[in-house]
Image 1 (cartoon, each protein chain N blue to C red):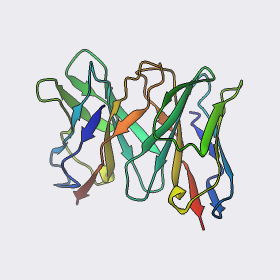
Image 2: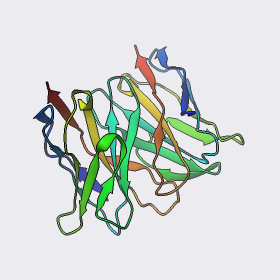
Image 3: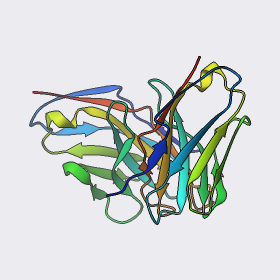
Length: 112
Length: 116
């Protein structure tokens, strides 16, 4: 079965640079979520989109923004990167509220 | 605000024995509860959910969970543990923001170690 696809799998950036992470949801899933997981931490919810509109907002820094496109893929844009942004970033998709969120394998972002 | 507590950082069980991973939650309104499993350097895999209905929920790989409203608990259980069940387990609750695509609030996770 098709799963959530995230790209790139690994990304190395320097402080103050920008990064763009991409997420391709499971076909027919109209809802996308972004999470950040630091080393040894639980995932922290950042932001979600339903039918291309922002739906819920968690602990997403102002330096980050995201959007969902007409084909339902989503991008997380990160600017002025800081050392503390080093983490595993997960995208998940679902068929809607109350339905299970299916996670991709994540993008590991390392800030040097 | 909602919260999830997993009181045990690690649970050790002998293969073939029953296992329980504990979870308690705090949320306003009716909870949407989930269990996920994570293997090293991988995404989270959905195991089971409770939305409404029977308090005993059955999920993937022989896992089940019991919802207890009075104790605000949602413990994960399996009658007979396998070595391959060794992984990091997360309990989660939906944020119930009302927006239709609520993010999840996770517990800190419990490392489950099944000893041969």
